[in-house]
Length: 180
Image (tube, rainbow, N blue to C red; front, side, top):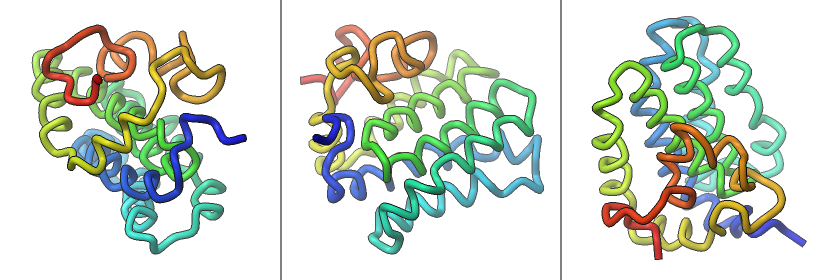
């Protein structure tokens, strides 16, 4: 049985492009520190191609960890978070909940150097979601309702800056267009 965090393949393809948009907004934070490392940029391009139906799910599941390894080639919190955002975007082929990871790590990347911009990054993300993406993401369970995956209670997407930026972990917030 599939995890409720997986979403259908159709919905994963739909949210992959949204996750790529979030990661791409912070990509320069990584590239400024590691201009010759193209793993995050490639992961974002693959997430977009996956979303467009140009890449197979199986191939992308096998490649999903490549961009995450790029986080070890940089040292600043913003660059590390930007690499992880790209990795999470590429992970959407495996599990739809990784779209929240891409968004949350993008917020973490922005907030690392400019904490005051956290709110505007979250607002941009919510504003740029289509109704179809919003519908697909609303199918994901709240943090703690599933024992495995990115939304597990106490997991990386449930605590700290990532938890605060994750709409499925955050408390009531009228700006959160995903909360039912």
